[in-house]
Image 1 (cartoon, rainbow, N blue to C red):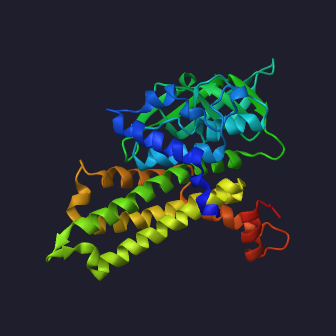
Image 2: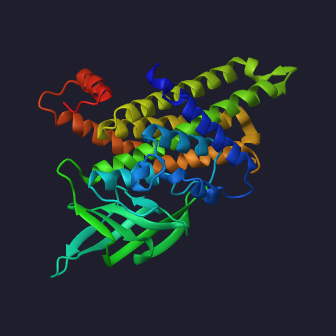
Image 3: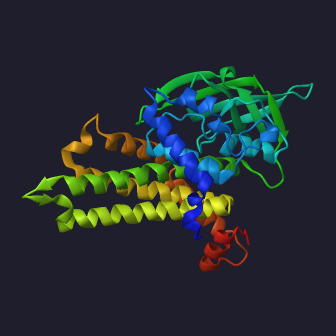
Length: 344
């Protein structure tokens, strides 16, 4: 089985089918159904209050829900927040946790005379939903869990209509906290959230590719499918290529969950999403702008997720800096070692 076939185990295919059926049966938001089924806690051991499984299983859930353009705020709880908490020997009750990780965040911690940690500053592009109970964040020194209601929320939406908030804290008390592990920095938390957005983009791009191929094969002009026109065939081929690049980058990051691999996955996913979205709308023409048609739900999500958890330009600089800081920078060795999970 190749790296790209990670999702083809019997258990993951069963999860994929179950979530597809759940989305097809749902009228309106599927959020509560997902919570009742324990989907947000996939990747967290059952002994810790989770639903079991690993990062690959959590990725299948994110990918499938994204391909259906489902309302899935907080479904990355197990993959991101619980992962970071476990790295610091912390645990939380079975609650939805949003992760506040954005390059623009200005979060700082201070301590009272009694040693209590307080959080101040601003967090940007935080998923906002009434079901989310906690917010996970990292300062330069601490990993902290705070109540979502402990800050002032400025509610907004991204291009896809998903709820996002700018949250301002002023000496907010924390629920849980720990000093950052010696091998953990705020950029590691940001990269983990970036991986989640890359996985979501991968699901949306796969659905976008299938939608474009189906449309081009059934839409006729001059008595034949438009897929027979060379210019359309070239666009479909490029969309397929961009989708495969995203799938490969995500598969590599899941197989070896280093910060560098997560950064590469987010950069690749974002750049491919921009190009694939443009090509998809060119293939569809006016049909793609219809609110009732699925393409718009996919492309607006792709545009939104590309901007969240670090744009490709941010991660490109980070990747370049990581490479140049090596004692003896060698590009090819860096790529190979990265795929093997080595930080050398």
